Length: 254
Image (tube, rainbow, N blue to C red; front, side):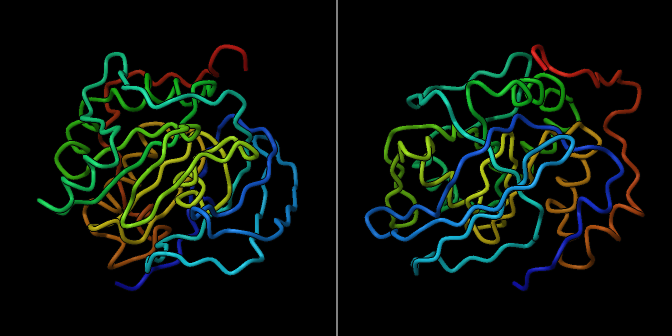
Protein backbone atom coordinates (compact mmCIF):
# COMPACT_ATOMS: atom_id res chain seq x y z
CA UNK A 1 0.00 0.00 0.00
CA UNK A 2 1.41 3.37 -0.97
CA UNK A 3 1.38 6.10 1.66
CA UNK A 4 -0.03 9.51 0.93
CA UNK A 5 1.33 12.73 2.37
CA UNK A 6 -1.25 14.61 4.43
CA UNK A 7 -1.21 18.31 5.16
CA UNK A 8 -3.66 17.84 7.99
CA UNK A 9 -2.86 20.77 10.21
CA UNK A 10 -2.98 23.14 7.26
CA UNK A 11 -6.45 21.87 6.39
CA UNK A 12 -7.88 22.37 9.87
CA UNK A 13 -8.97 25.78 11.08
CA UNK A 14 -9.10 24.74 14.76
CA UNK A 15 -6.24 24.74 17.27
CA UNK A 16 -4.34 21.71 18.52
CA UNK A 17 -4.30 21.31 22.28
CA UNK A 18 -2.16 19.11 24.47
CA UNK A 19 -0.09 18.97 27.61
CA UNK A 20 3.52 19.53 26.67
CA UNK A 21 6.81 19.43 28.53
CA UNK A 22 10.13 19.31 26.66
CA UNK A 23 12.22 16.13 26.63
CA UNK A 24 14.42 14.15 24.30
CA UNK A 25 13.48 10.79 22.89
CA UNK A 26 14.87 8.23 20.50
CA UNK A 27 13.41 5.20 18.75
CA UNK A 28 13.70 2.36 21.23
CA UNK A 29 14.27 -1.15 19.94
CA UNK A 30 15.44 -3.18 22.90
CA UNK A 31 19.21 -3.68 23.25
CA UNK A 32 19.84 -2.47 19.69
CA UNK A 33 19.47 1.31 19.86
CA UNK A 34 22.42 3.64 20.43
CA UNK A 35 23.65 7.01 19.30
CA UNK A 36 23.09 10.64 20.05
CA UNK A 37 19.78 12.41 19.82
CA UNK A 38 19.66 15.83 18.18
CA UNK A 39 16.87 18.00 19.55
CA UNK A 40 15.71 21.21 17.90
CA UNK A 41 12.97 23.06 19.75
CA UNK A 42 10.70 25.91 18.65
CA UNK A 43 7.84 27.41 20.66
CA UNK A 44 4.28 28.00 19.42
CA UNK A 45 1.19 29.31 21.19
CA UNK A 46 -0.02 25.86 22.25
CA UNK A 47 2.80 23.30 22.14
CA UNK A 48 6.55 22.87 22.05
CA UNK A 49 7.45 21.30 18.72
CA UNK A 50 10.53 19.18 18.37
CA UNK A 51 12.27 17.27 15.58
CA UNK A 52 14.05 14.30 17.11
CA UNK A 53 16.59 12.45 15.05
CA UNK A 54 18.37 9.23 15.97
CA UNK A 55 21.73 9.21 14.24
CA UNK A 56 22.40 5.51 14.80
CA UNK A 57 21.12 2.85 12.39
CA UNK A 58 18.05 1.11 13.80
CA UNK A 59 16.36 -2.01 12.48
CA UNK A 60 12.66 -1.26 12.08
CA UNK A 61 9.56 -3.17 11.08
CA UNK A 62 8.59 -2.90 7.38
CA UNK A 63 5.97 -0.22 7.92
CA UNK A 64 5.50 3.25 6.51
CA UNK A 65 3.52 6.22 7.66
CA UNK A 66 0.48 7.39 5.73
CA UNK A 67 0.80 10.91 7.05
CA UNK A 68 3.63 13.32 7.71
CA UNK A 69 2.58 15.60 10.55
CA UNK A 70 4.13 18.31 12.73
CA UNK A 71 5.26 16.83 16.02
CA UNK A 72 5.25 18.10 19.61
CA UNK A 73 7.51 17.03 22.42
CA UNK A 74 6.45 16.28 25.98
CA UNK A 75 8.13 14.80 29.01
CA UNK A 76 6.62 12.10 31.17
CA UNK A 77 6.97 12.91 34.86
CA UNK A 78 5.32 10.09 36.81
CA UNK A 79 6.11 6.53 35.62
CA UNK A 80 3.30 4.08 36.25
CA UNK A 81 2.70 0.38 35.78
CA UNK A 82 0.14 -1.06 33.39
CA UNK A 83 -3.42 -0.86 34.70
CA UNK A 84 -6.91 -1.46 33.42
CA UNK A 85 -8.47 1.67 31.94
CA UNK A 86 -12.02 2.74 32.69
CA UNK A 87 -13.35 5.76 30.82
CA UNK A 88 -16.23 7.33 32.73
CA UNK A 89 -19.36 7.37 30.63
CA UNK A 90 -17.63 5.76 27.63
CA UNK A 91 -18.51 2.61 25.79
CA UNK A 92 -15.54 2.15 23.48
CA UNK A 93 -14.17 -1.38 23.77
CA UNK A 94 -10.68 -0.33 24.79
CA UNK A 95 -7.89 -2.90 24.66
CA UNK A 96 -5.02 -2.44 27.15
CA UNK A 97 -3.17 -5.71 26.48
CA UNK A 98 -0.90 -5.68 23.43
CA UNK A 99 -0.91 -9.49 23.46
CA UNK A 100 -4.70 -9.42 23.22
CA UNK A 101 -4.49 -6.89 20.39
CA UNK A 102 -2.17 -9.12 18.38
CA UNK A 103 -4.37 -12.17 18.98
CA UNK A 104 -7.44 -10.30 17.75
CA UNK A 105 -5.56 -9.06 14.68
CA UNK A 106 -4.48 -12.61 13.82
CA UNK A 107 -8.10 -13.80 14.00
CA UNK A 108 -9.71 -10.87 12.19
CA UNK A 109 -7.60 -8.06 10.68
CA UNK A 110 -8.89 -4.56 11.41
CA UNK A 111 -7.60 -1.04 11.48
CA UNK A 112 -6.25 0.18 14.82
CA UNK A 113 -6.63 3.42 16.76
CA UNK A 114 -4.24 3.96 19.68
CA UNK A 115 -4.95 6.58 22.32
CA UNK A 116 -1.50 7.41 23.71
CA UNK A 117 -1.92 9.09 27.11
CA UNK A 118 -0.32 9.64 30.53
CA UNK A 119 -1.86 9.75 33.99
CA UNK A 120 -0.90 13.42 34.49
CA UNK A 121 -2.29 14.65 31.14
CA UNK A 122 -5.35 16.87 31.67
CA UNK A 123 -6.14 17.12 27.95
CA UNK A 124 -6.11 13.31 27.76
CA UNK A 125 -8.76 13.14 30.47
CA UNK A 126 -10.80 15.83 28.73
CA UNK A 127 -10.65 13.90 25.45
CA UNK A 128 -11.87 10.79 27.28
CA UNK A 129 -14.81 12.71 28.74
CA UNK A 130 -15.74 14.99 25.83
CA UNK A 131 -14.75 13.15 22.64
CA UNK A 132 -14.70 9.42 23.32
CA UNK A 133 -18.20 9.44 24.85
CA UNK A 134 -19.98 10.67 21.72
CA UNK A 135 -22.49 7.88 20.84
CA UNK A 136 -21.92 8.01 17.08
CA UNK A 137 -18.14 8.04 17.54
CA UNK A 138 -18.29 5.13 19.99
CA UNK A 139 -20.36 3.04 17.57
CA UNK A 140 -18.10 3.80 14.60
CA UNK A 141 -14.91 2.95 16.51
CA UNK A 142 -16.31 -0.33 17.85
CA UNK A 143 -17.52 -1.37 14.39
CA UNK A 144 -14.39 -0.49 12.44
CA UNK A 145 -11.31 -0.44 14.70
CA UNK A 146 -9.45 -2.19 17.44
CA UNK A 147 -9.21 0.62 20.00
CA UNK A 148 -6.09 0.60 22.19
CA UNK A 149 -5.65 2.68 25.34
CA UNK A 150 -1.91 2.83 26.09
CA UNK A 151 -0.15 4.62 28.94
CA UNK A 152 3.08 5.89 27.36
CA UNK A 153 4.81 5.61 30.76
CA UNK A 154 4.13 1.89 31.22
CA UNK A 155 7.13 0.15 32.76
CA UNK A 156 6.38 -3.41 31.72
CA UNK A 157 7.98 -5.05 28.68
CA UNK A 158 5.86 -4.99 25.52
CA UNK A 159 6.22 -7.93 23.13
CA UNK A 160 5.12 -6.78 19.68
CA UNK A 161 5.68 -8.45 16.33
CA UNK A 162 8.76 -10.35 17.44
CA UNK A 163 10.40 -7.42 19.23
CA UNK A 164 10.64 -6.40 22.88
CA UNK A 165 10.06 -2.81 23.97
CA UNK A 166 11.23 -1.70 27.40
CA UNK A 167 10.66 1.29 29.64
CA UNK A 168 13.39 3.91 29.26
CA UNK A 169 13.83 5.83 32.56
CA UNK A 170 15.91 8.55 30.93
CA UNK A 171 13.01 9.37 28.62
CA UNK A 172 10.22 8.36 31.02
CA UNK A 173 8.44 6.46 28.24
CA UNK A 174 7.94 2.92 26.98
CA UNK A 175 9.80 2.03 23.80
CA UNK A 176 6.58 1.03 22.02
CA UNK A 177 5.18 4.52 22.56
CA UNK A 178 8.44 6.11 21.39
CA UNK A 179 8.44 4.07 18.18
CA UNK A 180 4.78 4.64 17.29
CA UNK A 181 5.05 8.37 18.06
CA UNK A 182 8.29 8.54 16.05
CA UNK A 183 10.19 10.09 18.95
CA UNK A 184 7.92 13.12 19.34
CA UNK A 185 6.30 12.70 22.71
CA UNK A 186 3.20 14.85 23.21
CA UNK A 187 -0.04 13.90 24.89
CA UNK A 188 -2.60 13.06 23.91
CA UNK A 189 -1.52 11.58 20.59
CA UNK A 190 -3.82 9.45 18.45
CA UNK A 191 -2.19 6.84 16.23
CA UNK A 192 -3.94 5.18 13.31
CA UNK A 193 -2.74 1.94 11.76
CA UNK A 194 -4.19 0.00 8.85
CA UNK A 195 -4.77 -3.76 8.99
CA UNK A 196 -1.91 -5.88 10.36
CA UNK A 197 -0.35 -2.84 12.05
CA UNK A 198 0.78 -1.17 8.84
CA UNK A 199 1.21 2.56 8.14
CA UNK A 200 1.35 3.96 11.71
CA UNK A 201 0.22 7.59 11.56
CA UNK A 202 0.51 9.71 14.73
CA UNK A 203 -1.80 12.72 15.13
CA UNK A 204 -0.77 14.85 18.12
CA UNK A 205 -2.98 16.97 20.34
CA UNK A 206 -6.47 17.14 21.78
CA UNK A 207 -9.18 16.52 19.16
CA UNK A 208 -12.87 17.21 19.55
CA UNK A 209 -15.61 15.03 18.06
CA UNK A 210 -15.77 17.02 14.81
CA UNK A 211 -12.07 16.54 14.15
CA UNK A 212 -12.05 12.91 15.23
CA UNK A 213 -14.98 12.20 12.92
CA UNK A 214 -12.88 13.38 9.98
CA UNK A 215 -9.83 11.33 10.99
CA UNK A 216 -11.82 8.20 11.81
CA UNK A 217 -13.89 8.19 8.62
CA UNK A 218 -10.89 9.15 6.47
CA UNK A 219 -9.08 6.01 7.61
CA UNK A 220 -12.08 3.80 8.42
CA UNK A 221 -13.82 4.34 5.05
CA UNK A 222 -10.52 3.94 3.15
CA UNK A 223 -10.74 7.47 1.77
CA UNK A 224 -6.96 7.75 2.28
CA UNK A 225 -6.52 5.40 -0.67
CA UNK A 226 -8.31 7.78 -3.03
CA UNK A 227 -7.52 11.34 -1.93
CA UNK A 228 -5.48 13.57 0.31
CA UNK A 229 -6.75 14.53 3.74
CA UNK A 230 -6.90 18.17 2.67
CA UNK A 231 -9.24 17.28 -0.19
CA UNK A 232 -11.30 15.08 2.12
CA UNK A 233 -11.84 17.86 4.68
CA UNK A 234 -13.25 20.14 1.98
CA UNK A 235 -16.01 17.70 1.08
CA UNK A 236 -16.65 16.12 4.46
CA UNK A 237 -19.77 17.18 6.38
CA UNK A 238 -19.59 16.40 10.13
CA UNK A 239 -22.67 14.69 11.55
CA UNK A 240 -21.77 13.17 14.90
CA UNK A 241 -22.01 16.36 16.97
CA UNK A 242 -25.40 17.52 15.71
CA UNK A 243 -27.66 18.51 18.59
CA UNK A 244 -24.90 17.92 21.14
CA UNK A 245 -23.41 20.75 23.19
CA UNK A 246 -19.64 20.88 22.70
CA UNK A 247 -17.44 21.75 25.69
CA UNK A 248 -14.54 23.90 24.45
CA UNK A 249 -13.19 24.91 27.87
CA UNK A 250 -9.71 23.98 29.05
CA UNK A 251 -9.27 21.18 31.57
CA UNK A 252 -8.75 22.13 35.21
CA UNK A 253 -5.36 23.67 35.90
CA UNK A 254 -4.85 25.02 32.38
